[in-house]
Image (cartoon, rainbow, N blue to C red; front, top):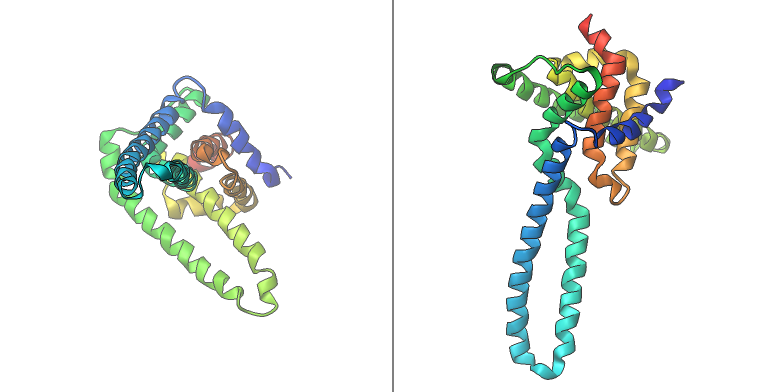
Length: 243
């Protein structure tokens, strides 16, 4: 029964983000992200202001209200762009910090960091690339037949359910990859370890997937999910992997 409610780990992960030694790896990528958007909006305002001056030189001061209308349209468009792209850019910016965040959470929980250094990172570079390729092949291998189900009469009724379950499973694997990989366990081995925990992993991933659909909350889903995955690894999978 506990496995069905593994999505609760996401709330625990969110609470850990403000702990000393952990928050740094959350704040830095968020600050970088805000600075990137602030710079883009500032540049956009500059070019838009020049365009507006050029336009008003033709229209004349009598149509001053058009300038206010144009600025209103600009700010609404900027808000929409930020809303729909913030989390995407955040994922890109935070990517180099994700493993470090997982390490920091593990240290907070256990008092010890995963065994690794610069030489370990270099040695594991090629295996990690291979793991990402394996992950992509695995995802495509299951996605194609599931997509086909959507066009088969009768079976298309259960296709959305199967697709949601598979997406939750993949999302769980995606975030559990960080604590697993920090201990040198890559994708093919991860799947073997998690084969007996499909319900828990799928429930965990489904919770993350649903959280990404909530405005504002989705800004913090990724770091919370990494922290949650690390908690899950420490409490449920560490002993299994070390055996």
